[in-house]
Length: 596
Image (tube, rainbow, N blue to C red; front, side):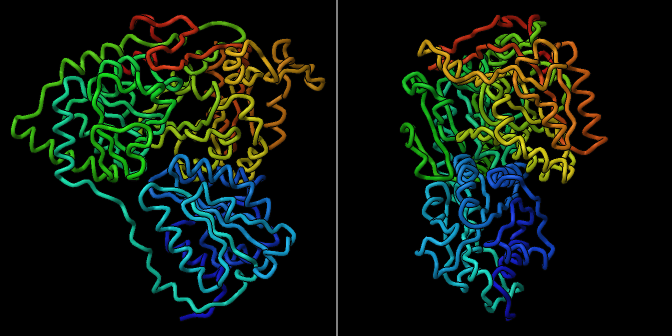
C-alpha cells in the first residue's frame, strides 16, 4: 500500500478505467485535483470557456466512439450548476459522462460558505449517481462505483463532488490491486427470443425499429446482419440513425412528427408488426399513440426494465442489452433459415423500397435568399459517407434529419431528447477529440450557434478542426413556426441593422450579428454564402481551410427568413409546405444515389 492524496488515487483510477479525456475549467476548490492531473500526466485536458460548454464537450466525446467516457471538471458552486444542462442532455440520451466538482470544506457545508452549494441534491434527478464525498477513504470506492454505474444497464452520467479538504487528505491506496467492478447488463433468454421471433414471423409486413440502444451496445453490424437474414425493413429512430446505412435496401426511413422521412412514415403505417430494440417510443417519434399502434403488434426489447410499458404496453416485452438480444435473434434466425422455416418478405421489402424511391421532399431550389432545403442537398454532395454530423435542435436540425444522409453508427451525433440550444459547437469539439482523423460537420441555426459561440476559441486554441454550417435566417425559426397556432409572431426575430457591417450586402446587413467577424475574432476561419450556386465552392474551401489551418471553419448560409419545414401532430398527417419530389426523376442526385 502507498500513502497518497485522494486526488492522486482518483486520477490513477481514471487512467486504469480508460477515461483519459477531460474538459473543464480550474478553480480554487478543484485545484488539488488539477495538481494531481499535472503530476500524473495521463489525463489530457481541454480548457473550455464555459463550464456548460465543457460538459457538452465531454458528452460529445462520449458519443463519438464505443467505450468513450468523457470527463467534465469544474470548481465549486456555479461550476456545478453550469454542468446541469450537460448532465441532463447526457442522462436523457443514455450517455456515460463523469462530472467532477470541487466543494467547500466538509465543516463549512452547512455555513453558506463562498460558492458552497448542495450540488448533490441538484444533480440527482439527471444522473445515475450524484455524491458529495465526505470521507477521504470513500474516494476510491466512489470512483469505482461511478464507472460501474455509467457502464451498467442503461448508460448515463455521474457527478462526484469533492470537498477541498477531502481532496487534500491522504489515504492508503494501491492502484496495482485496483480492479473495475463488473458491468451488469440483462440478457434475453432463448425462450424469450423464440417467442419474439415467432411473433415477428407471424406478421405479413414486419419492421424493426432500431433505437439508440443499438448504437450504445455497438450492435449495428449485427442488426444489419439480422435484418438481411430475415429480409425485414429497418426503421431507425433519431438516436438510432446510422445503425443501418441510409443507402441499404432495408433502411425503410425514419418515422416521426418532425425528424422523419415521407417514405419512413408511409412504410411504418403499412406495417402490421413492430419489434423495437433499444428504443424509448419517444413522443416525437410516435405522435398520437392511437395512430401509432393501430393495427399492429409490438415487441419491445430494452436494457432498462422500467422502460417497457412506460409509454404504451407492448404485446411482449423483454429486458435485455441490445447486443445480447440481437445476437440471440441472429442465432435463432440462422437455425430457422437452415431449416427453411423463415417467411419470404421479398414483396414487402420491394413495396417499402418503391416508396423510398419516390416519396421525397423537394430540395433543389434556386431562390435567393437561399432556401434551407438546397443547403442540405449540397451538403449531401459535398461530404462523403465517412462524415460525422453533429446537431441539436431547431428547424436546422429537423430539416437536416429529413434531408441529410447518414451511413454508419455514431455518424449522427444529436442531443435528441433534451435538445439544449448551444450544445452543437462544444459537442462537436468533443467529437473531434474522439474522432481526430474523421470529418466532423456541425449544423446549427443562428440562435443555437450564438448560444455558446465562445467555445469556437477552444477549437482554435487546441487545433480541433471541424466545419460548422450555420443556416442563418435571423429567426427563432422553430418557435416562429409553432407560434402559427397562436396567430402570432412574438419575440422570435433576431434581425437588426448592424451598424458595424455596412460593407455587407443589402440582404445580410439586416440579419444582425456578423457571425463571420465573431468567428474570425475567436481565431477561426469563416465563409459567407448568399447564392445557392456558391455552396459547392464554399464547402470545398471550408475543407481546404480545415486541413490547412486546423481550426473550426464556419460556413454561414444566408437563408430566406421564413421557411416552414414539414411536420405535424400525427405521423399520418404531416404538413408539407413545399413542392414535393413525387417521382424518382424529380429527386435530387444525392437522393437518387441511395437507390443505386
